[in-house]
Length: 88
Image 1 (cartoon, rainbow, N blue to C red):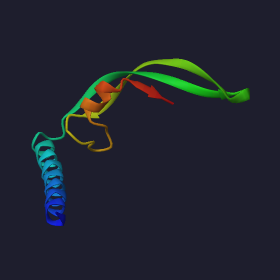
Image 2 (cartoon, helix red, strand yellow):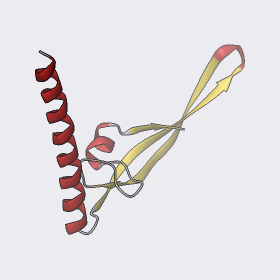
Image 3 (cartoon, rainbow, N blue to C red):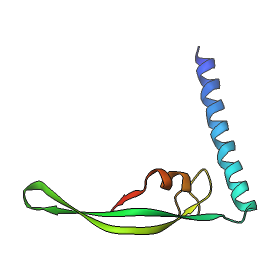
Image 4 (cartoon, one colour):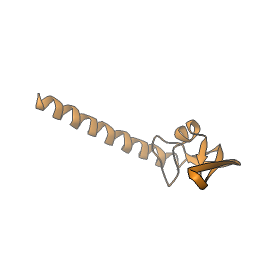
């Protein structure tokens, strides 16, 4: 039983490493493709009595990388498109 668990764990680690390496190679071949996604920015300000004030800051363009994993300091576009609200 321990061998099966070890094999499954090792297979998952190898698959994750291959996915990460393949994503990096494709990102380099495509010369670092980036995209822009419009995101709603909100500001949460703490008030007295453990209350919060929420202010809409506007819609801003956010640079993202067209890859599976975040690259060059930018989040992946697929993640940013699913989380279009950012809190400051």
